[in-house]
Structures are given as C-alpha cells and as structure tokens.
Length: 395
Ligand SMILES: Cc1cc2nc3c(=O)[nH]c(=O)nc-3n(C[C@H](O)[C@H](O)[C@H](O)COP(=O)(O)OP(=O)(O)OC[C@H]3O[C@@H](n4cnc5c(N)ncnc54)[C@H](O)[C@@H]3O)c2cc1C
Image 1 (cartoon, protein in one colour):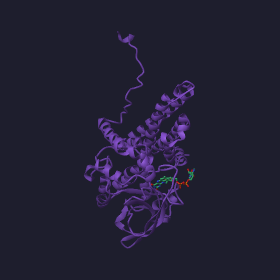
Image 2: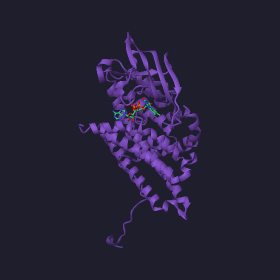
Image 3: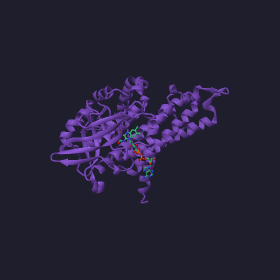
Image 4: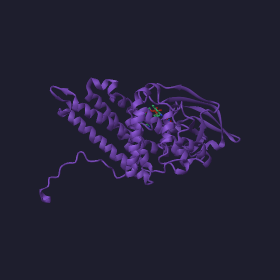
C-alpha cells in the first residue's frame, strides 16, 4: 500500500507521555504505584475510621519516597521537582485523600522551607530524620482569626536573651497531632508589616505546646487535623528558620510549590474517579443498554475528560517553568484554582452517573467528592487564587 493509501487512525490508546517526564520518572512511578497498590490501598477504608498510622511515613522513608527532590547528602534522592508530582499523582491512587494530604504536608509543605532556609544544624536535626521517615513534620500558618489574610496572624515570638518566647494558636493543622516539629509562622515585629514575620522550628514536645483537639471534618478523614495552642513556649534563637523578618515572603514561596503539588493531586484524583466511573457506565444497564451509551452520559464523560486534560497540561507546563527556576505565581494560581474546581466537578458528575450507587460509600465517588472539596479552600481559597490572578494584571 502506498503512503497516500494508508489510513491514519486516531490513536486513542496511545501512551499519554508528557515531555517533562523521562524514563527515570516512569520507573519511579512504577515503584511508587506498586507500593501504593500493595501497602496503602488495601487499608484505605480502615484509615478513614482511624487515620493512617505513623508507620506509613516510616515505611515511605525506608523506601526513599520522602526526599525525592532533596539532595543526596541529606539522604534524599537528588531528583527534580517532577518526582514530587509523580509522588502526588501516585498517592492519589490510594483511594485516600487524607493519606495523600498527610504525606504531602510532610514532603511538600513543611520540608521545602527547612531545606531552602534551614541552617546546617537545622537540616541535620530535622531534614535528615524527616527524609528517613523518623520524624514527622507539619506547618502552622492558619489561626482561628486569620487564614486567607496571613498578615492578620497574631502568634507572637518575643526575644528574651538567647531565646524566643512564643504565644498564640494555630488551627486546621494537618499532621498536628502526630508531628514531631512544626514550621511555625509568627510575628516578631507586629509594627513592621510584611517585614515583621519570622518562621520557627518548634518541637511539638516543647513545654507549652498544647495539642488541643482533633477536629472533625467533612472529608480527608484519614488525616489528623489539630487545633494547637502555644503558651510561653521557649525556643533557642537558633530555632528561627530563615531570616528574621522575612517569614512572610518565605511562606509565600512555600505556598507556590504546595499549590502546584495540590493541583497535580487534584488532576490525578479526578482521573481515578473518571476511570472507575467509566467502567461502571460500561457495565450498568438501563432501558436495555449500557448507561454510557446514552448521549447525555457520553457527553458528561467528554466534558470531564476535556477538563481533566486541560488541568493536567496547565499543571505540567507550570511545573516545567517552576522546575526551570521561574517563579510563575500567576500560572500556579491558575493551575491550583482550575484543578481544584474541576476535581470537585468531576467527582460530582461521577456521583450522578452512578445514580444511587454514587451516594453509597462502597463505590468511592462520594469520598473523592468530600476529599477533593478541601482543595478549593486549603492552601489558598478559590477567591484568593482569583485575586492573585486578577492583581497580577495590575488590577
Ligand atoms: C482539612 C484542612 C486542613 C488544613 N491544613 C492546614 C495546615 O496544615 N496548615 C495551615 O496552616 N493551614 C491549614 N488549613 C487552613 C487553610 O489553608 C485555610 O482554611 C484557608 O487558607 C482559608 O482560611 P480560613 O479558613 O481562615 O478562611 P477565611 O480566610 O476566613 O475565608 C472565609 C471566606 O472568605 C473569603 N475571603 C477571604 N478573604 C477574601 C478576599 N480578600 N477576597 C475575597 N474573598 C475572600 C474566602 O475565600 C472564604 O470563602 C487547613 C484547612 C483545612 C480545612
């Protein structure tokens, strides 16, 4: 057959390989995927009731999954930022948003500031054992009276000789009950505006740190969420993380990486929900045919697939820029906003396509919906993302 006679068929089954990933990433994906399938997914139901055990972090440390992009000298794997995307995506397949979030707080919220801003002593004390999974990390920004408006936090750190004395409270802190140390956002100079913030590494067993209560929530049940109080907590001046007065900017930097990882988790979570629902729509019969063959249902899948793909491409392209040293805050905000929104929309449509089964715990879509719903609030709400994007145009 001559070239002109060849029929070029659409390649729907083609491997959706993206240029940011190479063979090392593929191998990493395989090994994390195998671990998730064998050691995490079977426990997803149980951990909804009990929260996941600390031994998961320990095991992931042993397997080398906690410091994928951290330098080898601290026990990390020395990989790039894309390795963290792979981790976030594969963790979403565990069927437990709470577990994926607890691990992400450790690896992608609390760990990067210790790596970037920490002194050598701080890295040896906290980063090295965190990468091994021997110490668990959490991050404290939000307070009962200030969430979106980080500048409104009230937790104070006051210098007293060679020490700082910390007073205040933090809320909604993921890993707050299990953590060994908190990356704590405080004000050291309340009159200095954005230049009055400083971060501290506060051991959670320090006298005066009170883990007040485990908060009950809509979803993410496998994670623990804490209300914390700090009452005259004394830490040495050497516990300050990064530069004095630069804490606000340090934490804004941290939030960018966290938001992109959150976006990747949303896309992967939406994809899992889509795939399971597609299987269901192929099997479930109504009026003598598979429900997926009704045009209205087929179009729902088409809409969902298009949105998932758009969110994925936006996330990957933004990750590419971030990995290349750019600081694309506008696009990170867009990726976070869009991925979180479509993940909730997809989960909602998947519930609808399942009919009554969608409302049942057994089929999983309701949990994805409940878990994903957090992503429109945590790490910066939709409204804050829209504001960042709008302001980036000078408005
Ligand atoms: C399960 C869970 C886990 C979390 N984990 C952590 C954690 O580990 N560490 C941590 O520090 N925080 C954590 N958070 C906190 C989370 O980041 C905050 O809840 C979030 O940033 C919103 O803050 P807020 O709850 O105080 O809402 P608020 O700031 O009170 O906002 C209330 C509403 O007002 C809107 N709003 C506020 N300001 C504006 C504005 N300028 N323009 C338009 N609308 C606005 C918001 O979008 C929202 O709709 C967690 C939250 C949850 C629910």
